[in-house]
Image (tube, rainbow, N blue to C red):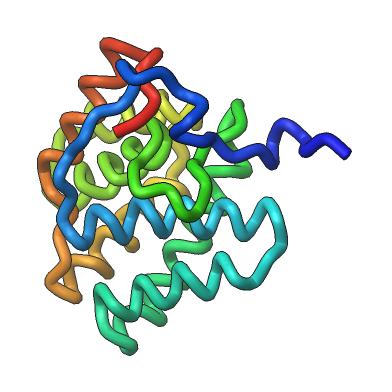
Length: 175
């Protein structure tokens, strides 16, 4: 039986060598990118193991107390992004060690909120994810960003450069 298009995961092996680019990511970057992957995969497959991975990563990155609050916001944020995107959001296979375009844009969106980047940059991220700007989505992104900041975890401002890369070269898929 073929996997429905909306449930397929990208594989780095399926992409050409010029689509790969290595970037050093901080633990909060990795948490947002991988958390996005795990939550979205969990929503699509219904498998609890993906959500457990997301929570374990949150606990490892943030500590148990902060992980509970941040994971609540994170799950709502990913679900809202997924529901309101006009296209299927892409994530790599859970075991992949690199990030795809949408995972990088998720990192950039949280970084833009944490570092109080101009609203145009935040809108650019929403556009690249094919989401209309929404007050509830903006509020959840801010809540997630604030939850990470209160645990002294800051997504690297360098993550915002992904927006420029993808806005100028939409064919690039893997970071």
